[in-house]
Length: 196
Image (cartoon, rainbow, N blue to C red; front, side, top):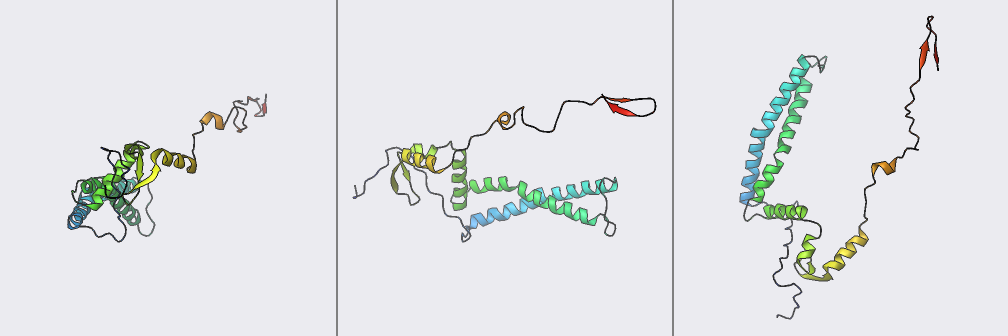
C-alpha cells in the first residue's frame, strides 16, 4: 500500500466520471469531421426533402381553398413559413443519428460523454451505487460515505411523489354542472313550448 486505504472491493467496476464538455470545449479533428458530415447529411437527406414536401402540401392546401392566401403577398408568406418549419424539423430529426455517430468514435471526449450519459439514463435506479460498497466522487477518489448511507440521504432530501388515481381526484358527489337529465319539451299546434 502507498499510505492510502483503498476502500474499493476487488473485482468491482467503478464508473469513470463524465468528461467536462462545456462552452470552452475544443473538438478534436475527428469530431469536427463528424460535425461537418452530420451538417451535410441532415441538410441534404432530411431538411431539403421535408422543406420541399411541406411547401408542396401548403401550396396544395392554398390552391384547394383550405388555407387562405395573403391579400397582398399571396401564398409566399405561408410557403416561407412551411419551408422554415420543414428545415428545422429535418435538422431535429437527424439529432439521434448524429449522436450515434459520435458514440461510435473511439478517442472522443464528446463520444465518451454521450456513452456514459446514455448508460446512466438506461441503468436501473441505484445501479452505480450497487457496483461498489462506497461511492466514488468526481475526482475518482472513494468517498467515506457508504452507498446505503448515500441512498438514505437521497431519500430524505428528495421529495417522493406518488401518482393520484383519477377516481380519487373527482368522485360522484363532486358538482360538475353535467347532468343526465334530458328535458322533455312538448309543442302544441300553435308552436307554444313547455317543459314537463
